[in-house]
Image (cartoon, rainbow, N blue to C red; front, side, top):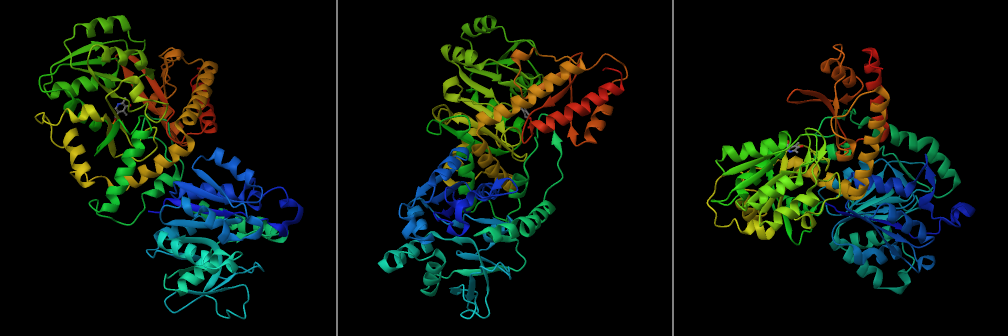
Amino acid sequence: MIKQAVIVAGGLGSRFGNRTKEMPKGFIEIDGVAMVERSVQKLIAAGIEEIIIGTGHCSEYYDELAKKYHIIKTARNDNYANTSSMGTLAVCAPLIKGDFILLESDLIYDAVGLKVLQNDERANVILASGKSNSHDEVYLAANEDGVLNEVSKDKSIIPNPAGELVGITKISKACLDKMMAYYNSDKNLIKIDYENVLKAVSLAGEPVYVHKVEYYAWTEIDDESMLERATKEIWPRIQENESLLAIRREVLLNPGPSTTTDSVKYAQVVADICPRELEFGNLMEEVAEGLTEVCADPKDYISVMFGCSGTGADEAMVSSCVPPDGKLLVVDNGSYGARLAKIASVYNIDMDVFKSSTYEPIDIAALEKQMQSKKYTTFAIVYHETTTGLLNDLATICPMAKKYGMTTICDIVSAYGGMPIDLGKLGIDFATSTSNKHIGGMAGVGFVVCKRDELLKQKDWPMRNYYLNLYDQYKYFLETKQTRFTPPVQTFYALRQAIIETKVETVEKRFERFTECWEILVKALDEIGLKMLVDRKYQSHFITAILIPETPKYKFNELHDYARSFGFTIYPGKLGNIDTFRIANMGDIKPEEMTHFTCVLRDYMHSIGVC
Ligand SMILES: *Cc1c(COP(=O)(O)O)cnc(C)c1O
């Protein structure tokens, strides 16, 4: 799995004249987006975790870009005026940890080229195209095995090229080391291009294969005429190709699974692999760490993962974390709190339930009074009650549980990844979530983020459960990098991509986006004249429970079907005798989509005479 990309962007772009005097070439825009920024977006969508940009001329532009995409690192080639692309790659080399994709900065390209390289099982692969007629071709020659043996702009040197150089290459760490040794071996090579160094190492026994895609849509942009050709000819082709792969959009306004990006959907399409292979173990290990980092410090916490839904994770936590002779206190102020209590009762766990209103804040004094009895070893609560959208005040409640010596286990399923959470600060020992809510992956992985010290206490406890045993799953994975039973393999690949996209957006920005969507919804509800179940100051911004209008003409199914015909899926909600419908802000929802939904909702409400 390739994790890094390197963009060499040191050059002066002198063939553009004035336009690139005070701006690097990569910042020339095509269709309103800088070439290099679009390239960064494609690399992220292809599962690249870190992008190193080798800069030089006007490097501050790239430093700014790195602030927007904090997975970018820049490395400045101070000698850019006297060196070439290899000189810039050499400056990046110390940051390169493994195999990587090398790109030029002045490219527009069909993202499928990245997939072609990722799918090629050979270590070093240079992407080539058929005839581009760009008038600036770099021709590649290869032997009968496809191994690169010549690079030239001069067609007379390569009369039958194996393809034209695109400027996107997959390079192994071993190959990079050889490239560096070659480059450093002779001072006269100071101005050499990376492709000529690739040729040299390829001829010297580190094979670099030419992979030609005959009708590949791409171009580099070196001067005004190439820019015009790029805008008029190539960009429309790239857009058309990529649009053919776009998946029909359904916006899920139900409380999970949530709307996913196409890149998360496509991340599942990978070569088959036995999950007991080390490669997959490494992937799961990285995913576990990525999941932990979203809500806790990996020094103190570890994520234990199961193939299951969020309730599976809840069951693993409740059935594993209460000591053999322990007693549990569960807060029930909605369906999910009730579910925690139900799970405990199925396992015959000694328990008291603290009941509280489903739409009003918990009475803290009453809860503390119950805790004070000191009868309990373990305290269970839901962070965000998805039933109503009520956010419980864990910052007050959890430290209280600590004060009375309890281990705190928490269902944070529908808060995790949607808002900043720090389990250590809150004093939460175990917390559950799932791959398909705010984190934005596919359904199938449930996990418990565990405080390591607390988990280790379970070592000698008799097992109350089997498949869902937390300590056993932890220990087996620690020793083998495998789950005890078959994990949902493809879901893990999607989850890896979802974690990358969460890191790129950041949880803070995600919360802002959900809040923006929620504000759009709340404003529209006011205008339509619909009421919310929970006072807005206690709401999470992730779920809005809306009281149904009083007219008998309202039928949930009709509203559902009408919304669905516009690509929006909504969800019913019933609490005792209070009838609501619910709108979730989760996953890849955009404010303009929420605005569109509010129009659909208004139309329906108008049709039944509500407004
Ligand atoms: C979604 C959710 C769950 C888990 O539901 P599953 O259908 O089992 O994935 C658990 N708790 C809360 C608060 C939830 O919102």
